[in-house]
Image (spheres, rainbow, N blue to C red):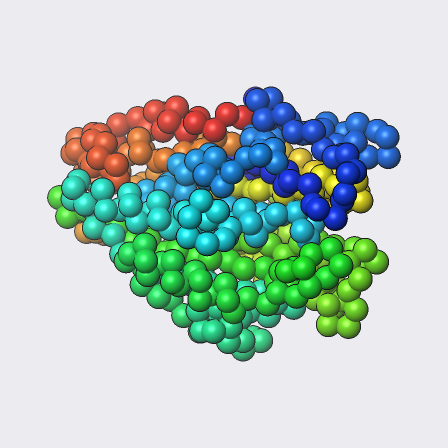
Amino acid sequence: DLRGSVRVFCRVRPMPSRAGGDPSTLTCQPDECSVHLNHDSKPHPFSFDRCFGPVANQEQVFNEVSDLVQSALDGYKVCLFSYGQTGAGKTHTMLGSGTGVERGVVPRSVDKILQEAKKQRAQGWEFSMEASYIEIYNENFRDLLSTGTALPANNAVQHQDGFTMVAGSVREPVDSVEAAAGLVRRANSARIVQATQMNAESSRSHTVFMLYIRGTHAETNTSLKGALNLVDLAGSERLARSGAEGDRAKEACSINKSLSCLGDVFAAIGSKSSHVPYRNSKLTYLLQPCLGGEGKTLMFVNLNPEPASSQESLCSLRFAAQVNACELGGGGRKGGAKRNVTSMSGPDPAEQVQEKPSKASATGKTSTLPGAAGKTSILPGGVKRKVGASSSSASQADKKVRSR
């Protein structure tokens, strides 16, 4: 049963040491893709596309999103974001730590893209990539690649040339794993982090890592543009519990407001409203191309199993269920992820390959490339197909991630 085009993966962190010997309020059943929350002595069952328990490691988590990440190299707009209360493990999932097994989705994704791009040179593809790293702090943009420089308050988000960017932000070339790792480390060191009663290193902002990909294939005279957006959201929090005061309280209010705006966007999409309030926050406006139906979107809902967090966990799970039911592109908008592949001799609207909305992960390796009818096109990954042939096989390749 395909319940929408937004995939949701649930991840439960290990029990915090401060919880002492308290029993977990969450029971995760990965084989059934379900999680059960016990709150106020009442069971609350939820089912998602994947569920990871406290023992799941970083590699296991990334392996499940690897194909979705790679589809950015095939010409899709891809967005992965983490959601949950402060201290639930969002930053650990997205960024991780160090250079080894604890690396998170961001560094592993860049490595994956670069490795696959190198392999595809053998099929005649040439790729160039640039990255930007933006922080949204108190509804203002900060450029983390410019040592956290605050951008002018009126800086606009630009949707042009198939990409989304913040005016005035730095875009740096990405051509090696080492260069990418250095870029990520530099950006993370400039991020605003403060201690609260709930989290010794609480992220006080949202961060968005954006990788812009351009590919060309001389033999078939085709080009593609893909984008990978990896978002580490600041955690929702209750002021009374976090002990936030002064600047911390102001930050918390800003965080909660922008997360509320994100909820409003998904509510509008879910109800197929003709108006979706993307412009109500910097975060949702920046992510509009992915959330608006032309991209592939996956959400991590991160959960803390300690009893004191059960109310926040219930709120996070309900929001995740709402998102999971959304079909991007609703409300009269044309649905389905669009593959940005064109002929270099001139764009043709018919050459924009579009997928039906699906919750399944996709590599995009079996979609049709543009070109004159009857010609053979070589897709990223080396798959050859007649241009103009049916692209129904794309939906079959799109089902690696099991939907429930």
